Length: 367
Ligand code: UD1
Image (tube, rainbow, N blue to C red; front, side, top):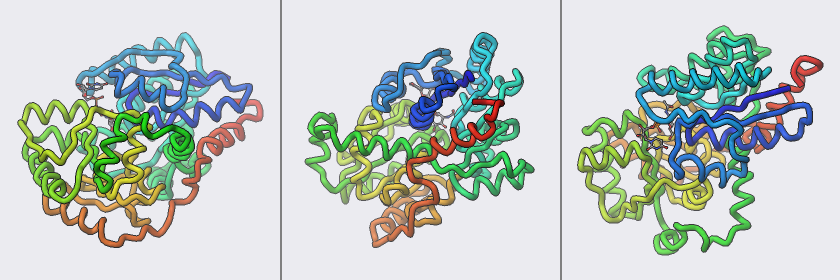
């Protein structure tokens, strides 16, 4: 059975790595990796393939950047050609980036079975491009692999058949546990950020890249005000996403010298830093989940989250985007918070469950 596993942007690579590895356990599955090229810089793409232990993509569509319409259209055109050539029985898409939507639509129109990994998450904020990507992809998928119960409930409310919804756990966490095992065996002195960590043992780790936070001058300046207050207390390590770097330059955002601006980091270097951080400040989706799995306090610089379980178990605080909201949440996160637990099935076995479900249909159909 030919399956195409699609990845395009940085957060996708972490998700496909464990799914790909697990596919190798099924001799009748011929799982091929498609890289749409949505992210293309070495530090946003290649370094992840290297770090995550996945082979070079079988197919590289080279779509690159552009407006949403341009980028989505380029991915659709090239992926359609690929599907016509490869005739996959199954297309698996992960997460909520433009590549997820683009390849999902193409696959479904060509009559392929479409599986969505990380289905059902909803922020209920239609100003987020990812919310639109999630809703469109889920409206046409055949198999829904979900990370938390809220996602299953959302899909049921949207009229999906309960038999097609599978609470399998979280492939991000499969990857996290796998990589933790790997970095324990690496000499930490080989990490480029080793001495930074040694010199500032009590630090905050920060990521920021959402258009709603960094494309709007007023919002970004407010966030920077809060970050400068936090940096007066402890060092802040900040790997800067290309979108954010552009805005820093364009708006002339000024940061305290105790905010260490770093180039985007590979997965292992990033994990090496955030796993021991006093607090993680972020607007990323994945990091809210990864910090939850390791019980690292997380402050999310957003008004909402599509991952409510991270707040329910107590590891994540939604701060909003005002300076007061961010500073207050940061202080709360420092003061004796006690996460109550790890969400069900975030145990490193999600990919195994996914392939077991697909195998269940198999009896002649898929595997
Ligand atoms: C995309 C995803 C977002 C995800 C994020 C992770 C969508 C709609 N958004 O946002 O959900 O959280 O990836 O990083 O799919 N650029 C480079 N080099 C690269 C890639 C991008 O310099 O390798 C620059 C380009 O100028 C581009 C900008 O960054 O215009 C934004 O890239 P894009 O892929 O459009 O969206 P992200 O903000 O990365």
